[in-house]
Amino acid sequence: MNNGATNTNGNGYTLAVHVRGVTKTFGKGEAAVQALKGVDFDVRQGEMLMIVGPSGCGKTTLLSVIAGTLEFENGEIDVFNHSLHSLKPREVTAFRKRTVGFIFQQFNLIPTLTLVENVSVPLLINGVGWREAEERSAAILAKLGLAGRERNTPAQLSGGQQQRVAIARALVHEPRMVICDEPTSALDKDTGQQIMEQLRDIARHPERCVIVVTHDNRVFKFADRMTEMEDGRVQRVHENPERISEPLNH
Image (tube, rainbow, N blue to C red; front, top):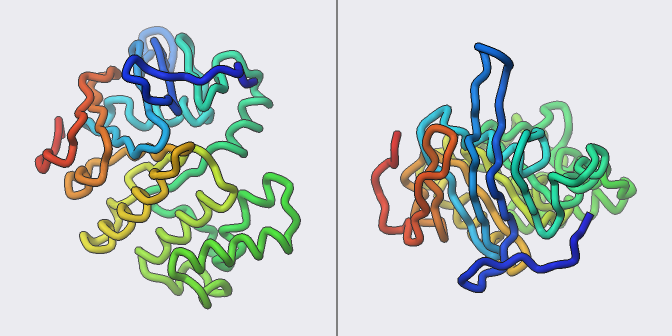
């Protein structure tokens, strides 16, 4: 459901994500744990925003509700003018297939599939035919420096190469929002820097955004802005995260 309006904030930025008063609780009764406690959160189009904070503060839960993989109790979430709080479950699923790309810490590649087959999965889910999916997957693998490796399996690649395959899979269906959960934590410093440079280039598209959850202070300099979370709430937003070199609240 598209409300037809362009979401902007008071500074004139066009918003990709607009979250207000969102709560999420796991469990019931005395065992209940409130993971999100009235979160307000914005992401601008054309930016890479990082979310930082101690383990258990709600970072991954926030990513999950924004991506539509986890329901929330109260509040409002608008992603590219789609009001997730007003969509039916099947509409959220359709929205997620089209709009969101995921990059995970452990790559999550299917070991028995070739690289081109792994990358083709989002296209096949969206109804693209196999021949077209294979051509588009091979093209994006080549763009990410993996030309000629299409028929390899993940086990034949280094960690950095596997993460590039994961990036290709996340981008092949041209999503407007790319969500990354600790994308550099399994990589060495130089490889992590290369991956973050690629993600920053991806975020520069004026109608896209990249959201990164990270504990890796080595990559803070790549962020356009940084949101710091603690105890289920957004505590502060850093407008100049490149100046930060030390871990925050870890």
